[in-house]
Length: 234
Image 1 (cartoon, rainbow, N blue to C red):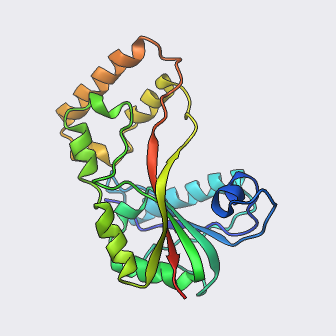
Image 2: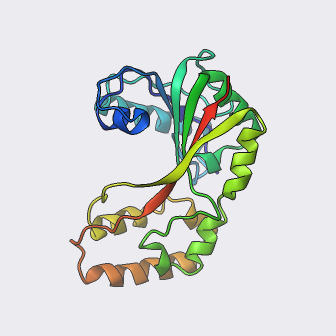
């Protein structure tokens, strides 16, 4: 189970973000809003503990990005004015949204006409294949089951007045070494681990440890991930 906290980023976007979104090498000023999952309620935390966790996460984010603005809300109810963003980014958070039709309407409200949503999400029928997932029993099937098929997501948006601007894949730079990836996976923060039995998780981690032990300092392999761009119609 996940909390419904979300963070919002607005302001001047330059560098790779501007070039990726706008296809431009110019420095530009656009209003970008990021709707992100803020806290995980795996441990059935109390409301007070969840608030404390949210505050800790925001404090860390502000220390790294002091020019951004962070607001608590949800994808279904965003505390921002209508038409206040040119772009919205959802990064691996769509499958956690409880009321998806309401989120579609709310995203349309906060984006200006012609504004775009960059939906970096996985889909059950267009699913990335991380190098480590094969080591877990039922890994691919269990992970894919967390997500909607692509056509279902597209239909949900287009029936509410959106259009598909593009669909493709992106490949992020390597996030460190294979050993680094193993240490992150040991934290068991991914949704996948809630879908596997304790024995399956332990078996997968043991197999992965054996595979990584041969060369833990090798760069973690990269893989292509889906990116669906949707435009709010006039």
